[in-house]
Image (cartoon, rainbow, N blue to C red; front, side):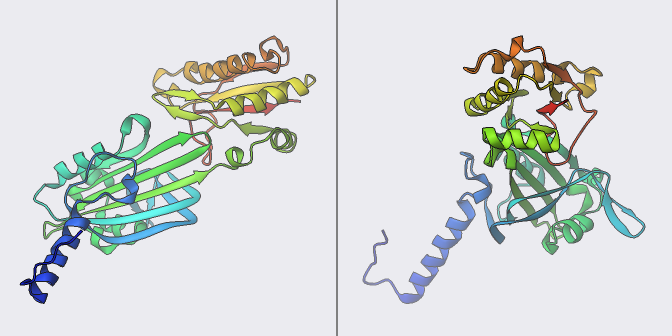
Length: 306
């Protein structure tokens, strides 16, 4: 509530109102950080695009100029609900300190970093500003760049958080915060009938899961549906195939195999019989040998062999 004084002039009131608006914009939370309890450094929003559905070009590598075109060694085209914000920081913190606070605002323990770079390792700031984000204010000094792409998986919903930070020659610091939420058709339309239909027509289906702290977990409803599918089709030969990029450093298939074996155990504990005693279902791990762009790299798929 605002209390007016009788001797408050109109011009003074306008000045007071402008200060209140500035403080609100500078100290508030952005919608990208809606679940964060950590405030951002003082800033103002210079561009804000509310959620809309469309395609997003996910850049997972440094930008390099090849044949007069800026390209990345690895890219992924995703389709989902896109939210974008461009911030200008108004305080006295340097670019390194701001990046640290941005990183703290995101709970990295629940996210998987798909790619990150710093300084010259990111490539040209001009390319990021004008070719990727198409925000001219992001064109800054190449040596001051920070970029990170993070992934969160929760019951078939995949969220990508993209952060880019740079300091311009005039010492102003800008950040681009993009978020893409991908609703997997498997999660949104998952029923007993849909799973059977997908297996018969495509031959495989990715099992909706949540990936947190290097572990895959499953909703009880998901386990019940897949257990029912197995119990209703004892004539099927089925493979549970684990996928994991975490197998790369070990040069074996232990992590992805554990993923598949764990889901097999969960099926055995369900109320629809015991698939563990089913001769025609087996668990395998293929590590990173069969990556796909749409589904997350950490996953288990059910494959109908015959």
